[in-house]
Amino acid sequence: MAVPKGEVAVQWKQALSHLSDAEKCFAMGDDASVFSKLKGMCEALPGAPKNIVNNLPSPKNKVVDELLKSYVDFLNHGRHVARDGENAGSFPNNRIDSENAIALGKVMMSYVSRLLSSI
Image (cartoon, rainbow, N blue to C red; front, side, top):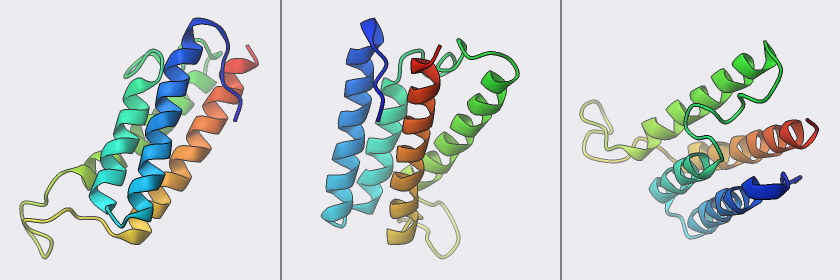
């Protein structure tokens, strides 16, 4: 994964550390923590939460920003205990959700880092 250079490299490395932690949580079967760690990954990105991709040319920046927002929304749904329905009182995620969240996180991190490294 390309890590942007300069001042933002430290933040990217922190974000990647959260991704690594999410993978460890997944390996231990702690699906709820996977979502929490991945949310931390997104929050550690330079410019988070609203200015991560501002340096990309328009309209690509808007589309990529929407992708990131949708991903964070997915993470938020897995981080909070369900209030009603069959999952009431528990985290509404499972192994498939956790594995998907990690895979999407890797794709988003790789894509955004390569985009930002190219400008």
